[in-house]
Image (cartoon, rainbow, N blue to C red; front, side, top):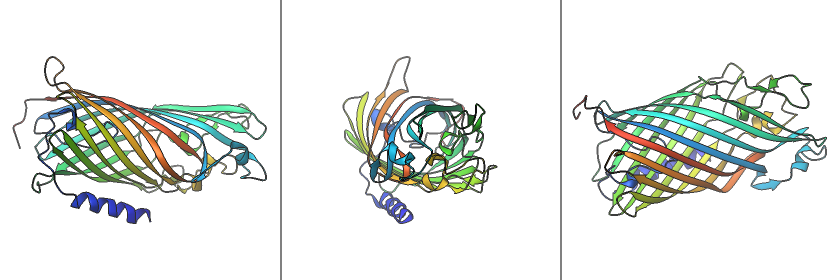
Length: 345
């Protein structure tokens, strides 16, 4: 089902009719800030970017049903010794883009992650585990396709390398004061080389603009701990309206599908807590996001963009018991300029 939906979404992006010539020189000239790899540059141009993402997860869900924490740790319920109660994930994403030609734009990205998860044990003991560090470094290329009418489209390909850690440890009430391996969700890295092909379409008409993107992330092989994270499929589409020369607002819909983990980390006991069970890490989610984009057209800060987006899940179907997502906020800054080293290619 998930592959059929992804193929359908990709096909819809390919056959969506064009609206008008796309230009980056307006506040909605970039996608909402929660969308990565959304645009290419002209030869010699560069862009520095910073994004801050905060994701809040609170409460447990099995399938589409919300469940009580007491049921997760009840011996006559799900039977786990511990249940997560809530989690926060912060990510600082640093990016650099450079276009050696009008067709090709190269991208480098490096995240810094800060993770915190609260738990409740069967004996009513509450505790928190935390981890943080640099994540997996990614290199990407985006290739501008030949226009079809006034339609603008590009393909992208990302290779992510396991520069982060899959050996994060912490102390729990069951570890007798010793550091033990933390579950999958608390690790900083996938531990594998991950490949992400994608397709993006953009269009504008008067004060309105639109876009769509389909991505698929495939994990290559197993990591050193004997598992690989599940493949991911993402499709998103958005519309935006420009209010003036510097401000626009957007509405975006996103579908995300994550497969279960293959293999298992032998250092984890899947009977203790749901986050240590590789079969309870997948699921799908529909979300709606509301965003604002600003664009500085002149002066000392010409080329600077400031943007924010608030994403709310509207439907979640999780392989649970599993923490559900409450909301996600993304804010960021982008600064584009021209090196003057290259001509148009």
